[in-house]
Amino acid sequence: MLLITSIIASALTIIFIKLSFFVIGLRRKNKVGLGSGGYDELERAIRAQGNFAEYVPFGIILIACLELNGAPWWLVATPGMTLVIGRLIHVVGINTPPPDFSKRVLGMKLTFNTLIALIVINLGWSLYHLLA
Image 1 (cartoon, one colour):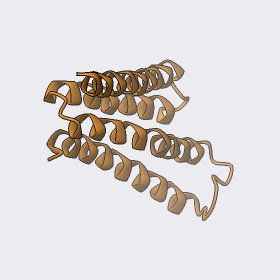
Image 2 (tube, rainbow, N blue to C red):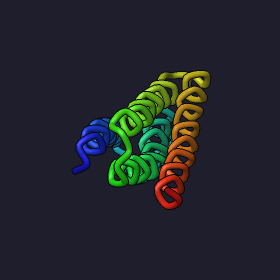
Image 3 (cartoon, rainbow, N blue to C red):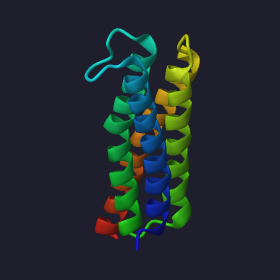
Image 4 (tube, rainbow, N blue to C red):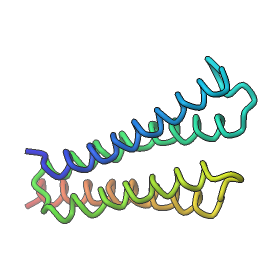
């Protein structure tokens, strides 16, 4: 069972839905069907949603691989929580007018470091079990 992955994926999906509804609301408010229509707030919201959609799937896949391969719960949950926190910080940084680049950068650092850690942990865990 993928209990930890299910919790992490659910939390991330809730965030994605919230981001999507924010984009939809801004599109309606500004009467923009496609693109940002030149509205900075809408452009930021679109990029926050798009950036989330670009990075989160890799994290979920790597978290699920760890859990499926029998890693201890804490080794699955820790990077999962870090990914959620990193993505939330990035969203706040990109959607706060004017964009708060320090939060945006911190969010991306947490995201990239988590993805890199997940790669290393997955490779290490897999190699350990292959060679043991």
